[in-house]
Length: 228
Image (tube, rainbow, N blue to C red; front, side):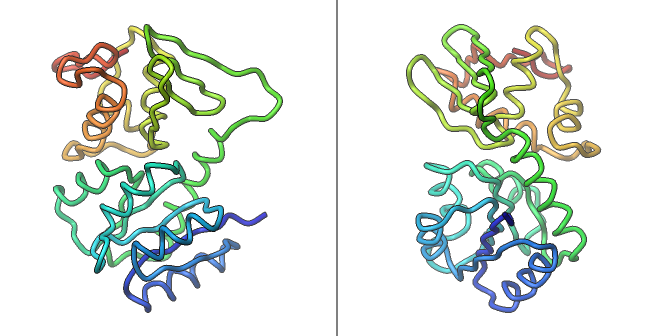
């Protein structure tokens, strides 16, 4: 069965062109011109990945992403004409997994989509296999179902947030540099000006720590990196 991708952009021409690129790769495409219609389509259909424009009338991409993340964990790739670091950080902090700056070429778009779908599929629930549970204090991580619990309360992480937490939890006591985390989780070379990992660590702490400013689980080793 083909993966279903939702394209959300107020520019009809961009929706059309992206749809052609992705349909040629065998994906099933749904389209929405704004955040409100996107949320409606998500509630009515099973979506495997979302391409989401940031600058839209009504509910913008950032707000739409945050609403999606309240109930869904599928990969979200932001689309934006803005290239400043601040916009990228804001987009990732709202729950997105990746970011493409317009204008982009077809090969880059397809590569990013395939990368996110591959990682998401790899970590989807595995049927008929024992659950792999990691317990650290009051924190419980189920690597089969990709669920995270604080005590009895489940907290929802984005796919990338979960990948980072799983990496650190599977290597308790080992310090990972920002570069190593990025290369292991994103599978790409790290660029020194990229704040992506720090943004994701901040969001994870907000979700699993009682006091994110005094973290119990993810410790910062100054000048080196992070560890569980």
